[in-house]
Amino acid sequence: MTRQEEATILARGVRIPPMSESMAALERGEDYYCPALRDRQCTVYEDRPTICRLWGATESMRCPHGCTPEGALTQAESHRLLRMAADLGGGMIDDFT
Image 1 (cartoon, rainbow, N blue to C red):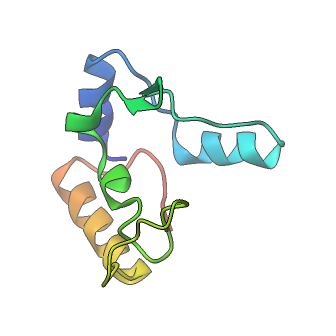
Image 2: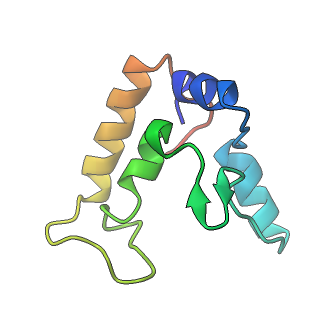
């Protein structure tokens, strides 16, 4: 998530932790659900981060329900888009490499 995306989402009253925090919770065996989800709906959908926009459209982040589109982005293509978003959004709050 870029710094600008984080600021926009924080202004809406939602804090989404950096990926490192989320991954650490998963590694400890804890469940992790995005804090923006309420009743299975994204409460910041209009302002969702680039990484969320890539979910299900990238080979390495396939939809668990089989909704991946034909011609999904490669991991390299999705990283290129994330880097472009970072350049435009003031840098990333966490490393995505």
